[in-house]
Structures are given as structure tokens and as C-alpha cells.
Length: 351
Image (tube, rainbow, N blue to C red):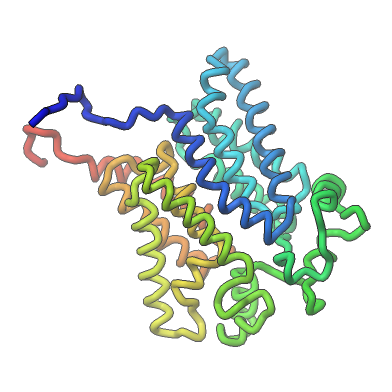
């Protein structure tokens, strides 16, 4: 039998930071394609604007700090943060929304703390929450899937809308949000939350044209596309299963408990998984190696707590989709989680 010796710390993964970040970016591609198919070319424009803003912002700050600009830019961490923010906002949000949000993510959330490896919060989610609180109207103006839209739009319309606020034929965002039934459309989570607040049951809420059963048209496919990319990341060992697995399991168990008690008021676990950004958050956002827990046990606790917070905020909070808030809340708890979940040092007794 031939033995192969490896030097400490016996870690066989030779991928550098840039390679890992690029693999995560590649894994987002199925979801981005699905998002573009259902919600228009605005998604690609937001991604382009975000990446350009992120690279320019990080380059300027690194030059001012007299850091190795080329080496840091090539780690693709700024590009990934920009990409995750871009796919989290409405596809036809004005150009200045993504520019401001990306600048905040890179300059404040990341570089102000010292750059990659020192930031306490997830940059993309920090930027998202800032935008949501500061510009709620622009950040909640999601379009209906193209199959349900009264007005169709193409790439040129997307460019016009993002930069001027109107399509090439003169329609504004509110007119584009009107569905084939003549009613202004909302996201599945928004629609259900509004109907429940008005005294309707879930069964009645699901009669909205945006739903096909309990699945939001377009939204479920987008979630499945990101799930495919996330499973690819686990298979290639870019991320471990601990955070996404525990996060999804906690969300399923907690929402399932409420659903069993009052199914006419509380949505099923499948509804929570397939509508909104829970899947994206589980595989692409919460797994950020810098702002997340570092120990195996800590990752399980970290992911489960995020899943718990998502359901709590979705059910009782003021925001229908709670991934960003849940992630930022648990980012603050990471030092405590890591402190109490550090494995015992070999040769030492546990205290």
C-alpha cells in the first residue's frame, strides 16, 4: 500500500480566492438566465452597472490606501458582491440605485473595515438593506413575469427604463407593473402579506394570477435555477452543506410548525422555499466565508438561526422577504458563535 504524506494543515484544496469567487459567479449563471427570461433584460443591465461600479470603487480606494490594486481586484470578491446585489434588486430599478448600493457595499461595508477578510457584514446584504430603507419605492417595484405582463418589453426598453424611467414607447414602471388582468402586480410574498393583512385566507390569496397553485409564476423556476447552482457549489466543494442545509431545514421546520397549526394563515414550507430569495440566500449569501461562522458546529448554528429569523420576519415583520435582515443580524453574532464552538485543542481537556 502506497502512502502519500501531506504537510500540515492537511488541506488538499489548492484553489485561491479568485478561483473560488469565480466558481460562485459561474454557479449564479443558471439563476441569472432564468431571472432574465422571466423578468427582462434589466437584470443583465443591473449586473453590468454593479460590476463596473464595484471595480472602479475598489480600485480608487485601494490606490488611496496604497495597496496592491491588481492583486486585490483579481480576487473577484468585489465582482461577486456586486453580482449578488444586482440580482437582489428589481430588474428595472433606476441606474443610480444600483450605483449607490454597490458603492456603499464596497466602500463602506467592505473597505471601511479593512477589505476582504476584515468586513463584519456581508457587503451585498449591507448594500441591499441600505437601499431598501432609503429607497423603498424603487426597491419594491418588481415587474410581473413577462408571460403575465400587459406591456411587453425587450432589451432596448430595459436600457431606456433603467436610464430614463420610461421604455422606448413611453411606458413608465407603474404601467409595466400592470398584469394582463389590469391589476398592478406584486411579488408572491408581497401579494400574500397584503391579502392576509386585509383578512383574506391563504387559499383566497393564491387565486391571484401571479400564482400557479402556491408557486409564484416565474419565481419558483428562478429559485430552482439558483438551487441547481448551489448544489453544484457543494458538489465541487466550493462550499459545505452545513450553512445552506441547516438554514433550509430550520426554515422548513419552523414554517411547517405554524402551517400545521393554522394552514389558512401561515404559508407552507414549500411556499417559503420557492418564493423569494431564501434559496439564493442559503447557497450564495449566507455562505460568505468572511462574514459567516468558521467552525463546523458554528456554521450549523449560524445557518439555522438565519432560517429561523427569515420565518419570524416574514410572518410578523414589515418586510415580506427577510433574507438580508436575517443574514446581517447573524453576522453580528458570528464572533460569539465562533467563541463558543471552537473545537478542543488536541491534547488539552475541555474547560
